[in-house]
Structure formats: C-alpha cells, structure tokens
Amino acid sequence: MKKALRFVDNANDITTDIIKKLKEKHPKAAELKQSAINDKPKTKKEGVVYQNITQDEIASCVKNS
Image (cartoon, rainbow, N blue to C red; front, side):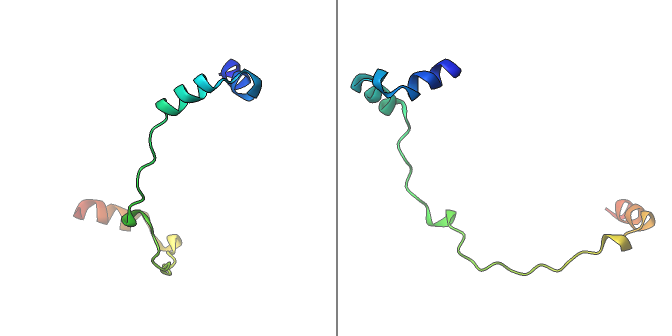
C-alpha cells in the first residue's frame, strides 16, 4: 500500500497511459435516485427513561413474546 501511494503521489511518474487504465477500471458514477435523498424534516422523538425499566418488567416482556 505504501509503495502504491508513493507511486501515485509522485505525479511525474504518472503517464497518460496509466491514467487511461485507471479511468477504465474506475466504475462509472450511478445516477442519483430521488429515493436516496432524505429531505423530510426531522421529527422530534420522545425521550425514554431507562431508570424505570426493571428486571421484572424485562422478564415479563420476554415471557410474553
């Protein structure tokens, strides 16, 4: 890895042939899907009080599930 980084960092050693080969191997960018954008406003979530959860309540939930 170190040798590869040193090679890439030294711009004088990079030829147009190497750049062409690297571009051929690099995947093409995918189109942005609208479903990937989360532009919905953040909803406020109620806080949870963990202090009130007891061992008995946990055992009861486990038995009922």
